[in-house]
Length: 279
Image 1 (spheres, rainbow, N blue to C red):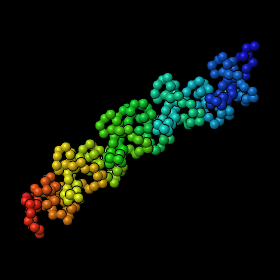
Image 2 (image 1 turned 90 degrees about the horizontal axis):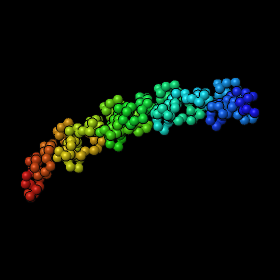
Image 3 (image 1 turned 60 degrees about the vertical axis):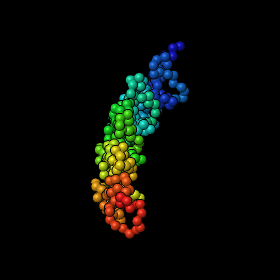
Image 4 (image 1 turned 180 degrees about the horizontal axis):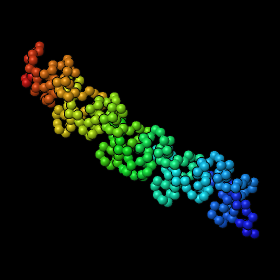
């Protein structure tokens, strides 16, 4: 009356798990009683090929042998690849149980499937579970601030995790030129380096120029944050943009925060009053 006597020892498809079980004593590992009516096959390979043809073949054969493929599977939400190996071994091994997912031999082949993700970034993130280890250290455009951030440990100044899907670039200069082409180039490169251009920007309402430098240094430095505004090297160049304003008056007012100091001293028609003092 032994269950192992008279069994076929052939294999049948177990649809629930996507593997093939052997028709043998169920007390033995990998064995089960074949439920009627079920086709049985002479080997795991034939069973996987014919009985579970929709299951990834390497998944079926490895699981039928109570093993893993050690291949790589695309993790679409995580935009990286996970390894099909024993989860007890730790990262990057994962409890992969998607019967039909394509399994690739290498991370490079797998990352090609995630073709909108930078290949180096995908590979690095697939091999490391750390936010700081395996980042690409390349740059991506931060549209909100008009600067480029580095894909590195966010605990470090100027670093951030690159949000998917975003193009990354090998340097700040290339990122500013290609990723933020509508932003004033010197603004982008300086802000990406957490700095200022020390150039000059036209203040149209004030009819003067303000300097793009650290506001804590005091006037004429200003908290300039208009991404697309032209930045000039000198006050003279900037004041040319305000061509309806007297050049000397524009320059003087740009360098001084007082309306009474630094006037052009040129004559203009008007009555005499207290506003003429210091003009």
